[in-house]
Image (cartoon, rainbow, N blue to C red; front, side, top):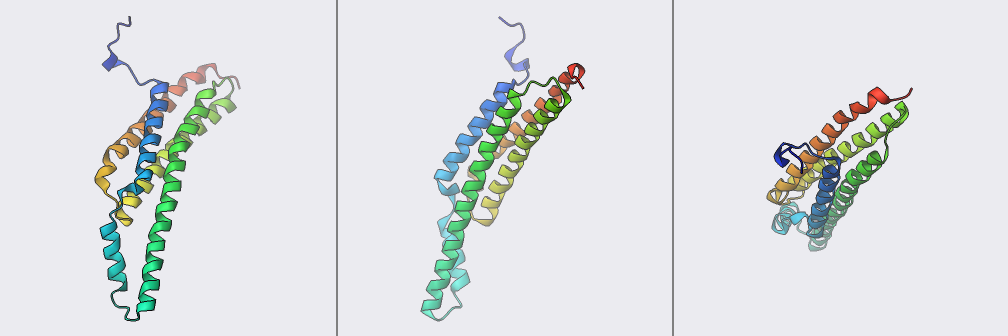
Length: 171
């Protein structure tokens, strides 16, 4: 039995991967629910943008185009956030398979961790965009955004602990 209390232990590499998987699952659930977009607000936008059109055919055409725009944005955001969430997992797994003995391997491992951090940032940005521009319920995203930030910080710590390899690196 370890004499170090669980609360005093640092995060393990596997915890970082496990957290990335939880984020991916949460993003998938958000996508399944169309990011909790508020259809009433979208309807209000459509009505506001078409209220001055008097010709009924043009008005219906404009409404159809606006709804198509929102639908395209939902599809684009869905693809982007799922790819970003998958990217976090993918780059972490690649980085964790590299045990550097040469500087080029160390740099490749670091690049993969950087890419995972980049995916965290892209994911946060897309969720922010969904909430602000596409009338999604931001309250549903709060815990996920906190998890993404926690993941970003864990990856950053993992990068810092990788400096332990430097003393044994062969040029």
